[in-house]
Length: 236
Image (cartoon, rainbow, N blue to C red):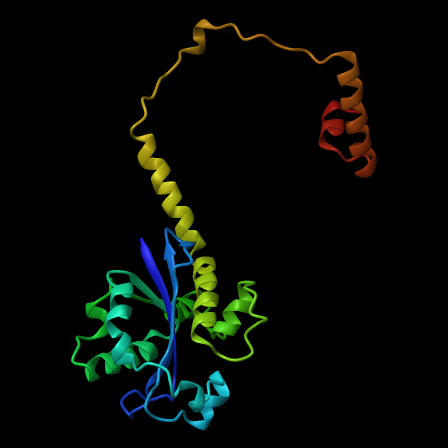
């Protein structure tokens, strides 16, 4: 299955209030493996970022002034995401911004172009109820190295989330492997062997092996203060 881990940075918190996407980062997984086929864009949002947003992502208004607008890259983005399962942390936030950007250019809502959306925040709340489930908290809990994350960045956060998602779903991977093995077993011919016609040899321990065995038992008996079951059963 092809999956895309996606993250955005924005000028603020309200897509309906006119805030815009300024960065999109996507990391591709195929069969749960990173492929390196990633996508990363900065956009000119045609407005300034709020002060609080600047403190989070650190992407200046001046840096974005010569970047392309979302509309100019929308076809390339949608082609890349087409029919993939999308993995997002706090999906409602990012999808609301993507929907608004698509609405502005007369396109259908985001979920029309993809094969479903997985919200890792919802997953984390189910797996770790009552705990902090921010991306940083999950990185710490699942031992994903986030030491390079001083500010939020869409591509870096998508890369971290990909590692977090793989760690969160390792149990599913094991189940998938087991299911695959079971299906192969049904295709194998089962051969039964009647062992009643065979006389199995009895191999006795030689003197050296017997001595070594007695030494081990003596050491166990000594460490237990003479309370080993075999000594008691033998009446020694």
